[in-house]
Image 1 (spheres, one colour):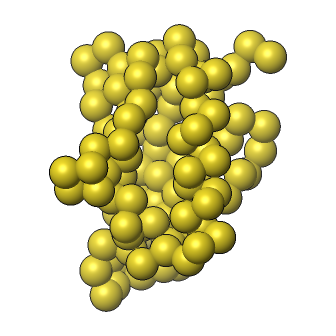
Image 2: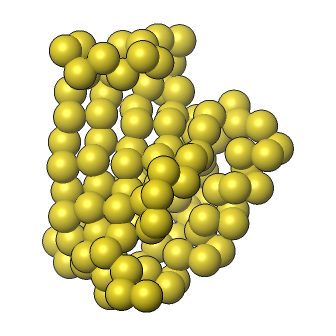
Image 3: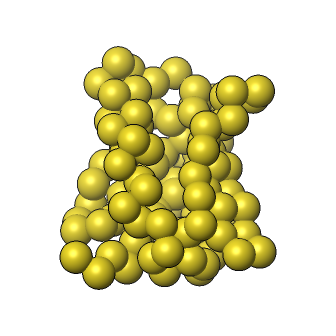
Length: 112
């Protein structure tokens, strides 16, 4: 369950995401058994695509990012943290179970 502050950060992120449409987007995703995100005990995936659209899917409470041949969703209610880690870089942490976490790192190659 996310806090009111985290909820507002998530909304702010998705309300301004349109400026990244058309940009190369990198998503690094880690599935972990603890919030320490120890790379030795995590499974990592990398996705690269040009962002075409994003949306909020009310059925299921999901945020989605879509590119050509790519579709990625995050469980809005499970996001416990959103951090801006650099210029056009963001990090979401979802708690999917008592000890299961997913970290999603998004980097936009933004031209401005």
